[in-house]
Amino acid sequence: MAQVTLLDGSIGQELVKRSGDRATPLWSTQVMLDRPGLVEAVHRDYFDAGATVATTNTYAVLKDRLVRVGIQDRHGELLDIAVSEAEAARSAHGSGRIAVALGPLGASYRPDLRFPPEEAEEIYAEIARALGDRADVFLAETVSSVEAAEGVLRGAAHGGKPVWLAVSVSDDDGTKLRSDEPLDDLGPMIERYDPAAVLINCSPPEVIGAGLEILRGFGRPFGAYANGFTRISDGFLSEFPTVDALEQRVDLTPEAYARIALGWVDQGATIVGGCCEVGPAHIAELARQLRAAGHEIV
Image (cartoon, rainbow, N blue to C red; front, side, top):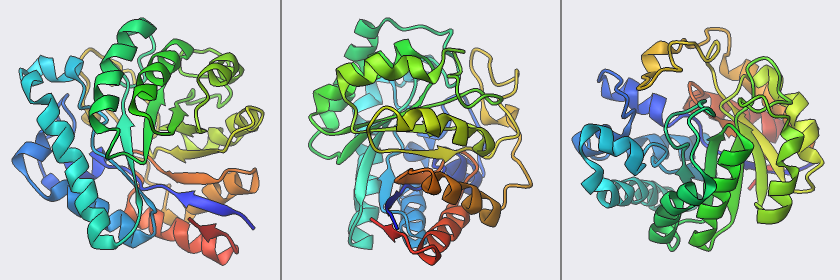
């Protein structure tokens, strides 16, 4: 039986649901200013469900996104709030690790919005340096192209902590990045920048197994955390998208999701959890099924 790190689930979607506010292009960032403590409550629920990692609400706390709404001067403040709320939840729980999320520049699922690696490195390095002393790991999320992978790996390295690279694959083919590049093309980048783990995230759970067979070949710990969308719609691939353009699946129950995730563990995955529309109930059921199968959650 395996030792499995259990990640949390959706942060942004949970915040939108709990706040009752209309989704905006800034996603869940404004919530931290308007509703102090709500992020901590989400983290606490995931810890209570069995997660051993709190992923900070920093996915969209990027200056290129904040400038659109004129609050780029609050970048450092928002980073601090996000990590502080995760730290408070961990203290209340008594254990756990903190993964500082690094989201994609420009927008999610948009490999066409290209940022040269040198430019991306500078943007991510500012965050990594600011939060390196408070992070247990940097989690680069929803990386959709090889070029984007290089930029975030270069930038995250400035934080002095392990980096987990989480890539997003095609809705229809788990062996291809959303840029249509084969997952295999990540190999030279992984050898050069040496992330501590390689994951697939924010992709349909049904396609992830095929991608994990490729990740296994990179010779590092690997895993996955899927989304619960029907698919990434054309309406979301716009200039300033909101989650209103995405439809939640009704068939992906906690039991169904956990069964799929246990299949990833059978393939050798040692890091699993959930992404958008995968909530605390899903993580609790995943924890239950992992323990029932004889795995140890670490």
